[in-house]
Length: 253
View: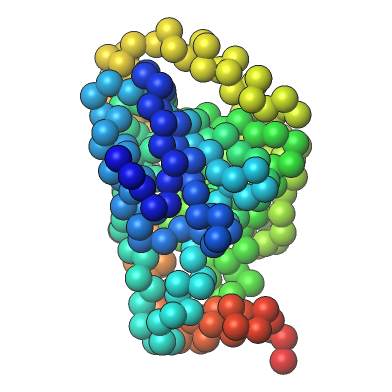
């Protein structure tokens, strides 16, 4: 398959998925969400491990503000919160082991991909941030996955502060499972071990864990509703448009 926003390589039982929008700082648009969902569907039957990667300097920088700026304030963003939530839910509960291999910046929705993954590996350049409140938004769809991974207070603090968290701190908080300057070696070491696991065993375990911890599914309606509210607020959209056009944050007069 040919994708516009992804680079995909199958080396069964592993599927490598690289988020690839270098011209847009690896931000998330509708096409990326659709293509990720398509790849996950292809992985249902035979793939046991999915490795999600980004660019060397940017893993994923969140929502596509440039695309939003193309719409008039007062209109909802084209990106559907239902679709992105369902994508992360599939990463978290689908019949495969999902690994986020992070280098460089992961911001906003990029942290959503990370928090939804079963395992998070990183190099020493990785940093994680939730910048939404700077624009009057908040990471509504990210929070259920982030709270599951590192607890309520750390997710709450990270949201309020909005500043990047270095990989060392992210590891301490539980957002990252392992990091090393030789991150490719770290990834290969994990893959060597994970290849021993059977598709049936992984499928049953992930199904059990999804049932044992079902807050992600229960939180969907609340998260999607909150996301739609903040992204349809005319004042928030005007601030986004101004930032795209001038580089000025909303509080700059």
